[in-house]
Image (cartoon, rainbow, N blue to C red):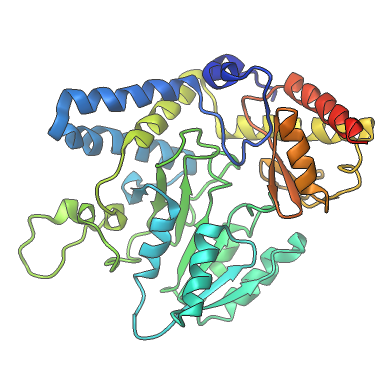
Length: 394
């Protein structure tokens, strides 16, 4: 399906009409509707002052929970908690385990920094023991990771739905859940590069996995609105806890520290709700025009194919000489960005940025991200600018 949503992104696209933004995986543009949501947050604060939280928790939070649950086929929106960033959730999940021994973790070697940096530091302190399964080769990662999970002995199994450094899809979530032998083991899926990009149905695993994502990328809502789907019965009393985690249990008087029994148990404390207002407005906009995640995904895959064909036709070395890390081919699932591995990645990124074409670089990997606000014309203009930039560099 080919989309032309440029009129719905007029504020971002109009801010710098010459800019070609192929970094949607890094900082996704926001649709105009999100600005209306942002203004609503300010207006509600002015209108209700101290009482605005009744609107936030009584109206905005439930609406966003429903929007997320509907797009993921989650049976109960109230299993969803919110936080300003995913790092808060990582800490809160880790705080669910016994403190008298290291937390035993299974992960891949390609997890994002919000997890990998924290785990590496806790390993230094002897507080966690982490086994890492190499993400590459991608073709058999699911089998290799499932085999490691099936060996058992883990408190937490943590893996990306889409790997941030490549765009490759992680393991099948149903097969992953079935491979973990201990029913008490936490299964946590980092879906920041999957949510609102890759069509996802969690209905079969909603009672078994934690699902972690946010609005900064493909949900088009900006910073400050991350979420965690919390399966019932797991992590009932995190030690890292804020007073919002007791909202539905504040009247208890049976002693101890009370917790909500739904997703609220993973809430922290006071936060800026404007991101949730933006996310709500984005969901309303999508519903209003009939825009779905499968339609966006189909559109983006088509743009990627056009981009690769154009690179080949233009003979734009060194990109054509680089290793395409992300699997591309008929029937091969992938995320919304293409990753080229080349020792010239940093230099190419810098030269393209000087030409007002935005990409993203991670070490020797240059990443191009595609979005619903791109059209075939966007890709053709980008290809022409890349060819000119490379030619000018000699």
